[in-house]
Length: 399
Image (cartoon, rainbow, N blue to C red; front, side, top):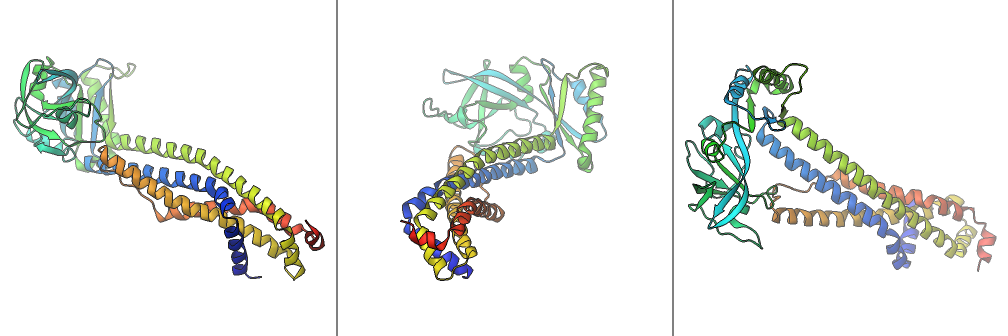
């Protein structure tokens, strides 16, 4: 018998047992659906983060305090003196209360320098999307750029803050010059960006809580080495000995992305590993169905052998039937996984994750279909061997 005859006989029997065939492959469908959807969404998320990272640039680092530590102008100047450093952006971030039309709203106030170079080289330069008005600009004073949630609120607490309205921070009035577009990372957080000088005054601070460091482009390929020089400069300025623990951390944007990437990869592996267990359960379902098929088709097997079918023909008929069951489950799983991924992308877009685009590569499709077919084949080996070993006379006498 030829390969096409094996396939024809297998398909004919699958069509004959419609309900049982669907019940058999449901486990395969769900498993492949989950693998495709999770992989596509995970890859889309990684690509979105990579896109943000590419916009920010690999030549940047952030200096954060440990515990209650802060940074002074002397620290800023110490970092500036490192040869590879092009610019240092001091900033302050602190929780406060924002008042708008007698409503008191807990908020995160960010004070950012508004000199020309800081605005051009800031890590989020060109990334922050403006819904209305504008972002902070050079020499701004007593103005605020607010996020979407502060301006519009939500279903339970709607607001109608507009460009030109006034908000109050610790009793100081600020004119709203811009509203940030809705983003994925804000949820219900209230964030207000104001000029650094104003922030230091209204928050009654003289020190900074974060330093942004921009390295010269020619040092982009050895950022780790230059970060060590920044650390040494800060240790010397802050009089920290080698035996003492640093009261600050310096992290490059590249290392932040790599850490995120590793976490995402590990999560995908773990989740897909768990999902694969259900794929094995689906394989067991195929095995049970094929064993039942062997019993039901005992006379048919005897007839095929009586008219000249070889043991190998019987083996391959049942083996290919099991493989086709797995493959059909895989095809439907890929299709439904793609639809689920599209649905997640639409929901993500609605929630503000507009930079997440699902990625279903040809390799993912081929791997999913191959895996499902392989599971079907493996699941069909034992039933196929049983069918092959039936003796023609015993099979024909079977009732």
